[in-house]
Amino acid sequence: MEKVAVIGAGTMGNGIAHTFAQSGFKVNLIDISQEALDKALTTISKNLDRMVAKEKISEDDKNNTIANITTHTDMNTGVADVQLVVEAATENLELKLKIFNSMDEATNDDVILATNTSSISITQIAAVTNRPDKVIGMHFMNPVPIMKLVEIIRGYSTSDEVTNKIMELSKKLGKTPTEVNDYPGFVANRILMPMINEAIITLHEGVAGVSEIDTVMKLGMAHPMGPLQLADFIGLDVCLSILNVMYKGFGNSKYSPCPLLVNMVAANKMGIKSGEGFYSWGHGTKDLIVSGQFK
Image (cartoon, rainbow, N blue to C red; front, side):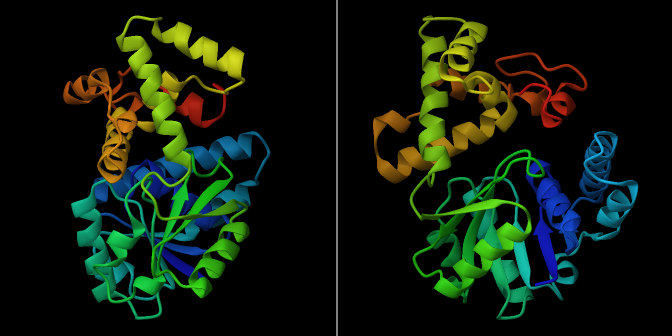
């Protein structure tokens, strides 16, 4: 496997493209928006500059990484000659099903189709393709170039061969792959999101303030980031989407999103991406978090 395509140039997509390209893979980064693609390349370049400044990579490494990435606004062109496609679009079921149906038609039959979904059923996504045995979840953590974990999620029909290939590929990226089965939220978010939701409920009920809740979890539980700060970093809309998937999938009230979270998303208080969530985020704060200065 030498060439991959990444669909979606947002935070996760550009991080995944960065990681593959830095590991020597040729990457076709695909998005319908040229503006989003240009922004993604700028973000990747800035993140590489930080690594150069910290002497983690050389200037040549940075230039080679950038050279490994080609951008495309047409999916058919972008996936024409790759061995793997990683979808990293918005966490929306209908959109993902549409993308996978298109990928299935546009790629050779032996191409593996992966999704970076953080909660949506791999089996349901695979069902819209003619190759369910070659559909798998690759749930990278944010920020992708820094975080070591990749959840590898097997759908009902995902083959052993494909699973083994993706496990080995993840190791070549310098990641630690962990195989899990296809249940709502998988492992990471099945455990993480109820904790974040409970922190929001604790705030909603007036038990303590934002900084107090986060301080308790950071200093008392040795978490590198408090749950409310982490929610802002993930995106409150993403947190809400994942909780809704788990609530629908399990039918258990413990996954029901806190009304405060619902209202904040409705008011466009999404966290870092909108500039305001549980915290106010000024210019450059996201860069500080990505570079590890808030850890």
